[in-house]
Amino acid sequence: ATTPRKSYNITLLPGDGIGPEVISVAKNVLNLAGSLEGIEFSFNEMPVGGAALDLIGVPLPEETLTVAKQSDAVLLGAIGGYKWDKNEKHLKPETGLLQLREGLGVFANLRPATVLPQLVESSTLKKEVAEGVDLMVVRELTGGIYFGKPRGFDTNEKGQEIGYNTEVYSAFEIDRIARVAFEIARKRNGKLCSVDKANVLEASMLWRKIITALASEFPDVELSHMYVDNAAMQLVRNPKQFDTIVTNNIFGDILSDEASMITGSIGMLPSASLGSSGPGLFEPIHGSAPDIAGQDKANPLATMLSAAMLLKYGLGEENAATRIEMAVLDTLDRGFRTGDIHSFGHKLVGCKEIGEEVMKSVDSGA
Ligand code: ATP
Ligand code: MG
Image 1 (cartoon, rainbow, N blue to C red):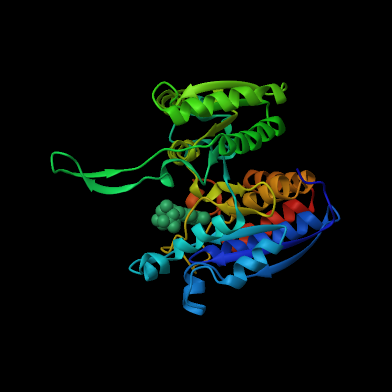
Image 2: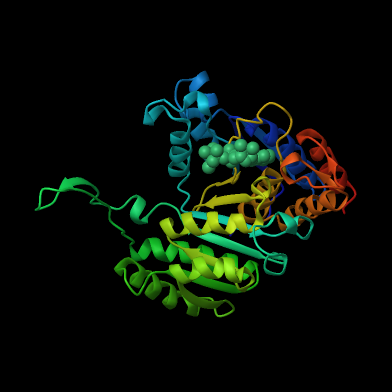
């Protein structure tokens, strides 16, 4: 938990593709919303991903990580592109992102999926089902089957090739992600659904036990449990039943992508990755979109909403966060749309112009 202070160091990592375009616009919005709350920012822009490979030869330069670790929060654009696709693993842009997450010690990945009333027609679901969806998936990011050992390839007793991985969670890892999730549920609507496969997997049985025990520390949060197969079904059947979902690394990977499709607007979705202490990492969920990079076509709203998460979850500056969220809604209400969310009867604008419109909305306190 952070107590509001009035000046902050923000590391900006524009990265690749549309990253620099959306970061530049989001930075201005963050700065303005902050200034209206008496907050001062100093920004440090550092290279990461393909941009860092081209400049320095590694996807995460030491200095970038050092600056990021010393700052109060990190805002990232996007990483990757065709240009580096054939690079060896340690020289891939995406490796820089993994190293950054590891270096910052962020273990909780927060992905909200909100169906905005202005964009309800973008949803892949029927209007009645999609309308009013506002949920948050809290995914454990540094444990589970993606990292568990033993792992590898081998040959079984019949001489057949096998590949194997191990789902491992310690009580410590479960407790710390659960605490983050309970705190978030508390800031939202007080409902937490833990998703596991405790009918089959021991790691899930421990998960359920630890989370159930922790519930007594959060008497104001209503805890429920759901098996992951049912959760995958319920997310498309009746997503409004969910407020905050907490789950492990692999289930969270899948469910957060599923939840994002409920909204249907990849250019609108923010994310946050938090650790126990130190700066959080905030970034849009979309990639570098090389097909539209450098053309002023990118939707910067996901990055602005990531900046709002930075204010809310990273700095504890909820009022400034609300200013950005409200301004984004107001800009949509006034009919402005980038290409990815454009529909008949709206004003089609580019990245910079929608940025300026959001600035006007922030300014007017709408
Ligand atoms: P990555 O591997 O980096 O996640 P990806 O190919 O999976 O990349 P994105 O880069 O997220 O996916 O983009 C998929 C498509 O969605 C893009 O080609 C682009 O047309 C569109 N898109 C993504 N983000 C935006 C945005 N902010 N504004 C407009 N269009 C976008
Ligand atoms: Mg992708």
